[in-house]
Amino acid sequence: MVLQAQEGRLTTSAARVLVATAVPAERDAVARAFPGGTTEVRLPGSALLHRTRAGYDLLAAGVGPAPAAAGTATALTAAALDGRPYTLVVSAGIAGGFQPMAPVGSLVVADEITVADLGAETADGFLPVTELGFGTVSHRPPNSLVRVTAQAVGAHPGAVLTVSTVTGTAARAAELLARHPRALAEAMEGFGVAEAAAAHAVPVLEIRAVSNPVGPRDRAAWRIGDALAALTEAFGKLVPALESWNPHDHS
Image (cartoon, rainbow, N blue to C red; front, side, top):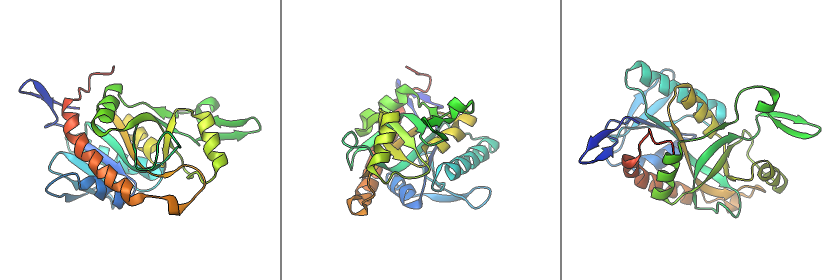
């Protein structure tokens, strides 16, 4: 992040942050953390940014890793061409939490953003795409940024999985945990956002509020309103905390 020295500390006054969510409800939950409201800025195509006064642009990019990657890449490219590139990309929203590690209502921050279902099914089990000789399956946000975020908002750090199909059975939840024992949550956009950020060499962060358990699909157990409120509260604490983050600290 481009930071300036002020009275012996670092400040994010020069920072430009892109927050990518899946749906408008998540975007609006983040927006409620910023006083003064937002203004709309049209991107190439039909996408709209909601711009805050604090240097944060909010984008509801769409559901799933492909729309998330496309929308994030569009915003990153437009900013770069405008001569005002982003200095941090945040994937944010609600998620399913693996129980009991990430209970409903809690916050998680990804120290590892991993796509869980990109690969091939074989007679011996699932093979990630990397074992087929292609691409990548994980991105790691800067350790220092994860620490700052976890401390500021009270989030649990761990792996957040990106899936194209939401888990709906106990068997699949157990299978994912067996392959990814550090997983705290699953969502559908983080890896797509991280891929776009990596292509532009911009640091990435993923923060999620847990709205439901990962496992058997039971809409009666979902607490979406509570999770969105937790997301608002988290960003209210995160924005000032980022003033102390040094992007050159990779420890």
